Length: 455
Image (tube, rainbow, N blue to C red):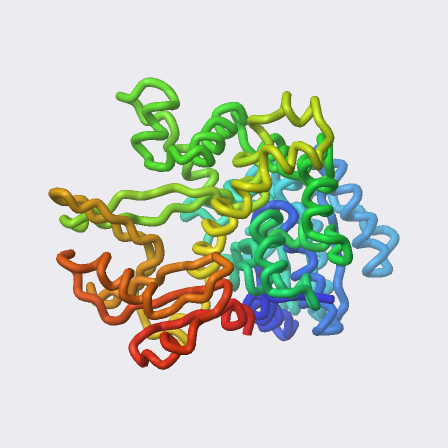
């Protein structure tokens, strides 16, 4: 089964008509389903395709591998190009009478900091694109490398008809992998394993959630612990600094200055390049708080749920995990905080994803969503999910509890905003356990149930 990615799928398919030359760039972090997306688009067009996988070897070996596969594809056993310009040029000439798709996966390994590869492709496009009937798709996992390909000073700048940065699934698309599970269980799985296609495909959903969590993640050297560690080890330089940033954010140290001061000399920018890297990889994100003077203060959080769970509950407890059975560790170090703190926090993030997905559809149109923090005099209040439309606010209180939300909660929320210098449009609630009849009859309340999240 192929899940989600409708918009990205249609973008690629639109470029696969093979009546002219087209070029598509698809990139994003490892394990999120780039190759599956491209293969699905190709399979739906039912066009001929030459798929090539670059290896982490030198350029000449990749050229030899590619040429052998291309020779077989064209039925030309004498095809032995001397360089990649001849390789690309010959294939583009071939496409004039034999339209096809050229898909090069892991292009970063082919490029490997050698700009000549891009220059060869640029030259082939310059001289042969006029009559070519091929779509070239380049795909890669190293985001910085792939972005440099289309940098304004790069040889291939302006050559791509589509540039697609693929992100992880949000909670709704991730739930497609969990068909048949109760909605509450879908939230638990997404809160721990996130929206990475690789993770979602490697879970046995017939096994109870806590059993999966203990055996597949909490257990030392488990499948998902290794996956969490590999994300940092394989993709981020100076992993010790990155580990420290993640551990600080997981412990509640989430403001830029706070993080920077704890990472070294407060007079220097110690974390800027790491923060930018982690943001580009969809591993962390930020929301903004507005105080009474509307000063913007970024608050960082771990966006990748697999890493959030790992750094919140596992990485700092290596000794304890090594000295007890994983189910005992879960009962004593994870269970209470997981259900009373971690899941309610993730529920708030899911509600944010819901309102963004339904902005102007099921939710009244808004300009931004984020936190509001007010600190003035004796008043110190923070609201986690607030919609803003032309400085008119709709706060949404998120209740991940076993009790239904009623008018008592409505009046309490309304009281929190008394004497604050903000204009409120309406009050909203997102509830795990639903709503009492009295608040359902309240016309001005914006109500989001667990069932609404997955409709």
